[in-house]
Each structure stands twice: as structure tokens, then as C-alpha cells.
Length: 333
Ligand SMILES: *[C@@H]1O[C@H](CO)[C@@H](O)[C@H](O)[C@H]1NC(C)=O
Ligand SMILES: *[C@@H]1O[C@H](CO)[C@@H](O)[C@H](O)[C@H]1NC(C)=O
Image (cartoon, rainbow, N blue to C red; front, side):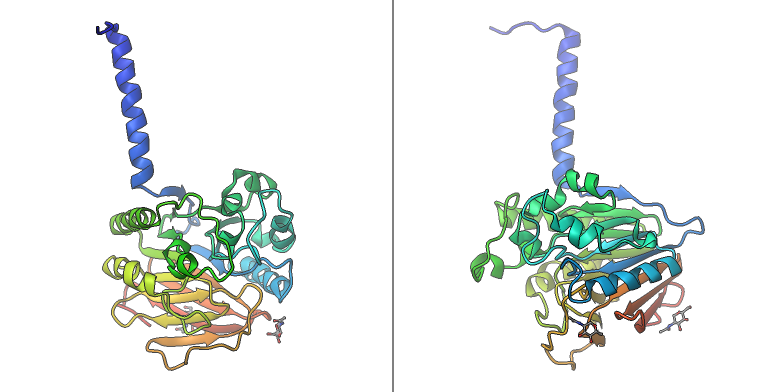
């Protein structure tokens, strides 16, 4: 027997149900978004660093010092971390003192007291991956923001952060003695399919002047790990089809710039935040290779509505390589 509901009660129930449904649908269909205002003149500057957290060792502190100087000089708006934030095995939990020892106490310069936007690397997945996503870390150091995949809308630029570790087959099939924290990625196939769908939608619908995608793993690299075939197959076509300007990554402990031969995408590796000098290079005759440096350093990005200026620096703050791209001319690269 049906229990008669008062009309108003039925209506509020209907509202509640539709709210819950909309909530669930938007979570699975859209990446979390953050707004970051550009400067008053419309320009935007940031630094990009990867593969860094080693309690200051392996020149991490020297790189941090130079980042501080450059951050002040170019008046940066924020910092992007391309992952492998804490070595060797991510954080043990959200109370892990490595967070402060490798982050808070290292990047102390005034100019670096800005928002950090970080993704997870494969080493982060070897610890408690969820710890790095925890709001508790933001209480310890308010600069920190790490999520698996998200979008930063910075007016003239939109930056799409993509969780690349789950793409790499080897971590599942031949973990080589490492354990990975795959909580939240129980159905890997569905996770990747959903993520690609979300990224494709976000970059396609973006009307930003500059579209930048950030992930931990390189799409193309001549360093130790080389290309990531899974990303060439699955992520690169989305970048090529949607006018993405730059793909920025870490993983290989080097600095490099490779141009795509089939599109305007520029591949920029900034994975030199601490241990480097692996001396393990997969041939410098790769098509599109413009620059490769095997030592420590970082990258800076300056954007205006018409021009992008990107530079790579070593531990002494010396500029090793620059690239400019203009939107008025077709391309100055
Ligand atoms: C630190 O940087 C200098 C200059 O590039 C380099 O000679 C030295 O080997 C680096 N140290 C380590 C531990 O990588
Ligand atoms: C890039 O632009 C800057 C400033 O406009 C200029 O100083 C620099 O020489 C340019 N570099 C290249 C490689 O074109």
C-alpha cells in the first residue's frame, strides 16, 4: 500500500534526489577546477619543478635557492610540480615528517611562498598516495595542493593536470619488487577511460589562449626512461587534436625540450629537482630534440596573451635553453 506523501514533502524529496544525481554525475564527468587569477596586465608566470623531495640532498637545496631568485625576478604567480614529490617511496602517511623536511624547510624563499600545484609520480604511489592528497597537508603548509587530476584556470592559460602513473602497464605487470598504492584505481581500465574522457572534454572546450597539460611521465624523452608508449597511444592524440601548446612532465631526471613532428605540441621535461646526472641517454639524434641537459635545474614559464617565453636553468641559475612561441606569428619555434 502506498503511503501518501504531502505534496511539499514529495517535491523536496524530488529535489533531494535530483541534487544527489547531479552531484554524482558531475563528479564522474568533470575534473575538479581551480581559479587562479593572472596578473593585472593579463600576464602569468610560474616555475616548473619535478622529482625533488630528498631532504635537500643531491642539489635539491641549490635548485630551491635558484628558484627563489628567479621567482622573485619574474614575479611568479605559482609553482607547478610534475611529481615524484617525495623520495624514495612517497609519504608514509599524512603525518610523515618528510613533508616538512623535503618541502616546507627547503623552498623557503619569499618568492616561493605561493600556491604549488602538484601531481603524483610513480614514487609517490609507492607510499601512501592518498596522504599527499590530504587536506591535512594544506593545514601544515598552505602552499600545498596535490590532486590526482584537475584543472587550473588561470585566465590566459588553462593547465590540465593528469595522473599518468596508472597508465603505465609495467607498474602492474612487473612491479619489480615495489608495491603501489592503487586505492581509488581499483578498476584501472575504467579509471583511465574516464580520465581520458574528462581530459578530452576539458581541453576541447577550453577557450584559453594557452593550453598546457602536465603529467609526471614524459610522452617523449631521450632520458633514462625514454618515451611512455601508453601516453603516446592514449594521451598524445588528444593533445594533438585540441591545439595543446605544451606538455610538461618530470620522471626523467633531466631538462629537455622536444618538438612534436605532427603537431604544435612542445614536450618539456622538468624532472631535475634533485638527483640527476644518470648518464643514461637514449641517443641524442631523436627527431625534434632541441635541448637536453642531464643535470639538476628547473624551468620558468612567462605567458602573455600573445607570447610564451620558457627558460631552463641549472643549479647556478644559468639559462641553458630558451624557447619562445608567439600566437601572432604562426610559430616562432
Ligand atoms: C650538484 O651540481 C653540480 C653542478 O652541476 C654538479 O657538478 C654536482 O655533481 C651536483 N651534485 C650532485 C650530488 O648531483
Ligand atoms: C625570446 O624572447 C625574449 C624576450 O622577448 C628574448 O630576449 C629572447 O632572445 C628570445 N629568445 C629566443 C630563443 O628567441
